[in-house]
Image (cartoon, rainbow over all chains, first blue to last red):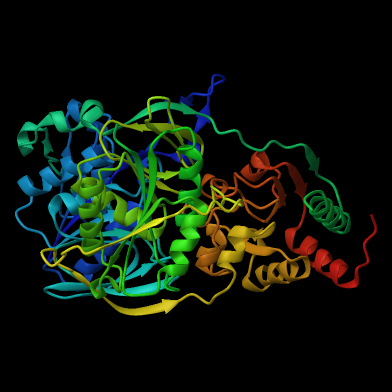
Length: 265
Length: 336
């Protein structure tokens, strides 16, 4: 069984601050492995736990420093990894990111059964790159997966969560599977894994290496672009009560409920 | 001059009726094309043989000019590859300027397949749409966990977007257009259906739909500590005619079912009043409550981020306060 896992390095969104001019402060913001991607990695490692004859390759498109994200997942037990890195890739939207990933997979991974992705990235949260990648590879797709239940030679069975319930789906291989966070515990790297990752000579491929026409990526090659960005107009604290008894708080809340109800009738 | 066309994908639910967001998109599109001469709002329905009369009437009332029905038994269950094929073929015939999907689980999977095959751009999970003077789509979406909004444009055609449910309202005025219906047959046999549904376990019909429309929402987080405490919110909701929601933390901890999760990966609510009990206020959660009128936060941690996004803040023991509220509402012993 050959599994490819797509990993994205993202800024730590719990650590985002604003300047006075409402622009994001990016300096000093730490980069981390996208949280959902850990669950994709964990699912792949679970397959390997049961079937030693499983080869897991992690790939990422990003700047040189995204090496760190790949080393992190290598230390967890992933077998191989490579980075797709080219200045022409910078500024790619989901459509062109998916094109680059597909080109990298086609060129550098001989054959594969499953491509695992995190359902969404914590920075962009578009959840589009996985499906778009499946379309570029012309293989099956299943998203919003909470569990891989069964893996056979020709198919997998997964649990997918929707607004209406949980679907048990049988899907033919090869396929892209987009994993949600779930209740599995993501394993910590072992020291031996860290050492292995440190010594790993991580290949970095540019557009030419994967036979990709860089015109179809980056700011210029992406079909969408950001016209402007602004800070959302949020709610601001108008009343603050820091030392009320629960009794008083309950009264206040009920009063607010009635006021609001009356004013909206 | 060519017609200016907006095409909306209508998602059918298990109840054989469109998802609410499909109507919201038609209604919003109707508002957007008001000042555009020679425009057309189209709806694509892909499904099996059912009675479409009522559905077409309901779309007509929101302002749809044309409903295109692709009807075949192969579409009984949702299949990404077959649905994609049907939609792509229709779009190739119709050549719309704009294509909209609901940002539902299905829409977020299907729209990128369609956009990729058509080699066009797609903006995800939008919370606002507008059309510029030169008739381009401006799609606004939250990013960085709701901490920033970005306005995204598309260079290619059709310009595509998925739109979050419950951010646009149904039109209240009944427009009643003379909607044309076009039954279409698309040969999808060249496309392989590579999945089959083995089992469907429906969520209990709790109050998912009520939640989206609720005027009062009581939401609980991990701060409620256990499932029993969380269940007190159901009682509060019952006593006041409100609904109950949960943060991701409460769902992950098993206090609440996933269908009432509020936030970027759950539902968006737009209630008049939203009371968050024991919710710390991760950006993921805040993204789902932005359009509520009044947000009240009850938390024992004065540094909880939720207070920076609330109109009213109360420091206190959430469980105790809920207990008192239930007691008072039951006895109607309110001193104000």
